[in-house]
Length: 124
Image 1 (cartoon, rainbow, N blue to C red):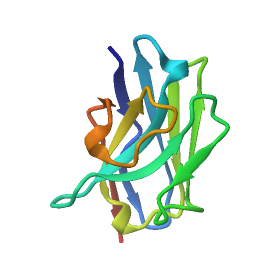
Image 2 (image 1 turned 60 degrees about the horizontal axis):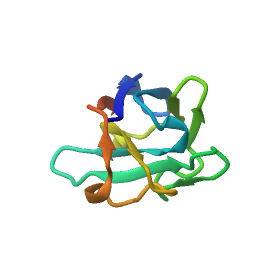
Image 3 (image 1 turned 90 degrees about the vertical axis):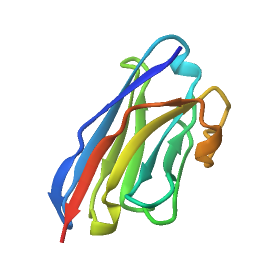
Image 4 (image 1 turned 120 degrees about the horizontal axis):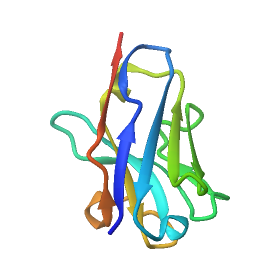
């Protein structure tokens, strides 16, 4: 069983930056596709970014392209989300996600493993 634990959320002003981390425990880290979703109050959980098993391919939601960067360190069993130029509309609970599929699905309903979430609040 894979367990995911996020950290790094917080309160930041618009235009600021944050770096989220997600540490994984359990087997199979190097064969997991990893990524991030977010959920704002009253909204559905939405895809943000994902990275392949080897880390050589990344993909992003249009709303965060050019501002967010996902990366992974397989030696540390950790995936990161660097966020810059944050906007108030980025405010949400951010979840780490993992899948044994080659590519992380963009549909939350078929994600295998979830973290508990870390809150990101961007003030205007």
